[in-house]
Length: 272
Image (cartoon, rainbow, N blue to C red; front, side, top):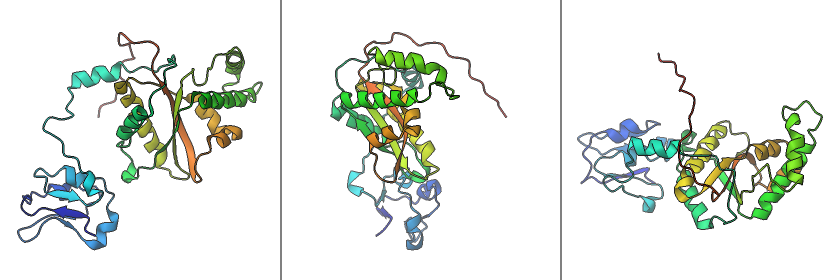
């Protein structure tokens, strides 16, 4: 099966597809032939689509899910630097949520965008466990508290915080998931050294995209620490065989709105 399909009536033989290919497998066109990928190198294709989307004349089609090709209308997706800057600067970690659930179709819309996050070699190793049931979120938070209780009196860096966290839980407040109705848990293949970075990129996409859907997020640090060390929590998560917990974000509808942008430290940079 051909790796790329080229429309000879549209191809201008500009050579861009060959230049932008990350693995350098697209032979450039010449006066007698169109761009092509030789069969011997077809297995090196990572299906990133750079060749296809960089073709000015739209003559090239990556032969991977060809029916799903989407063309960009002129001007689509262009955001001014000012608008994008304000959107990102106003992003907040949400720790107070309403009881209103986020519809599954809304979550699916966020994930549909997050799946376009960059990954090493276009490996796309990140998969998701969405805990949509608030009762299950609360149960996982309780298992995290159980783990915290094992740290009391130990030399663990968190040990000094444990009494107040446990006391909050026992008084009816959830200091782990902050009463969020949902969790987005990202998991990756065991033993994949690149995936540990890929998953942070994917989670960041989820985190950044969510507010556009009216959804607030907060990175679930306590839950993630517990998931790395507490067997009962690992069992409760029941991830597929060969997959390992990476990190999670809690999410839901924010209880409060934001009306400004807080201050941050000046950027520290070394120029060379």
